[in-house]
Length: 445
Image 1 (spheres, one colour):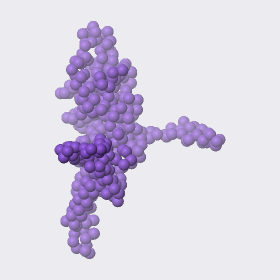
Image 2 (image 1 turned 30 degrees about the vertical axis):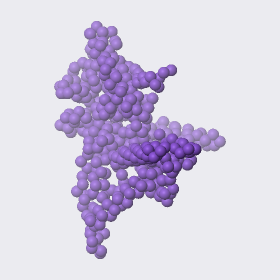
Image 3 (image 1 turned 135 degrees about the horizontal axis):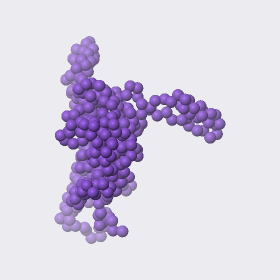
Image 4 (image 1 turned 30 degrees about the horizontal axis):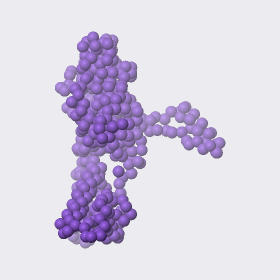
């Protein structure tokens, strides 16, 4: 399951090497223009917000390693360490946004770095509002994830503009040569002009990036000189006190927003999250969380009735069955509303690569009970919907996956407030179908 040139370089119409841009910029060190990126492999080393206690490494030529492994194994067997953090993370249920809010900064970083759960309420994805505000006020020198994204897009835009400019210059020179009489007698035609990506990148690095680096340094010097205290004796003291005052006034106004599926997975499957009722300020039990989330699966929310029978076709149960299925397979699951789908599947997370698969969750009513009730066609979608979604995913280089969740028939004795969640979810079955757009030029065989 998924989302990169000759030795002498091409020549223009006058026989001048386009790659001569390299010679003029040989003294420029491109590495000086690159800022050090954060070590995502170390930051997101844990796939889930749990503490893992692995056994020691087996060394074949060292027999004492077997004794070490046996000792650690029996110690963990007798005194089993807890993988759940102590204390567990706290979240506040919000009926207005139909989500769970996590406000503690330590819990926010732990949930994001350990599995990419939730999103920042004031950010596109990673909660980075506080870091962005510090950078605006000159209190932080590191780049945020959104700034890295904006920087990559700007470099890609300059790359395309520079490539288009070089191609246009080559075309103009060729047209000018043809208007001046074309090839002379015995003249050998020049090779076709192929401008490589490396030429454009180095041209941009030697010209545009140098100019941007100079402009940035000048702006930083100007802002520093404008904001610094000109008094020589008390300058550093006043600047440090001013920075401390700004940091005290700057409060983090962002929280981590968890979807209902994410919050239920952290509560039921991992047991690392405790959800608090905003009215009573008391933790909500697992038996009370299920009817609460079931009532908020549609808008407007329906009244919470713990004595009602469980409706297996509830949208929350169907979507959570798919979410739990892909999380248990090791995928990083994120919301896919940006690409007109329900879920996005990342191999390691959005910090490492783009999503490889876009999932649409479709409830399937194939049980004879639903056929008798006349609901066997409720989950079917029209063909134009399928073509529309598939076309969108092909444009963003993602593979469309239709995830059919088999909805079981209801059970009369199964009450919402007393339902066994584990036994309830075992009745759901998940089927996956990968759909790719058929292109005659590529799929002839």
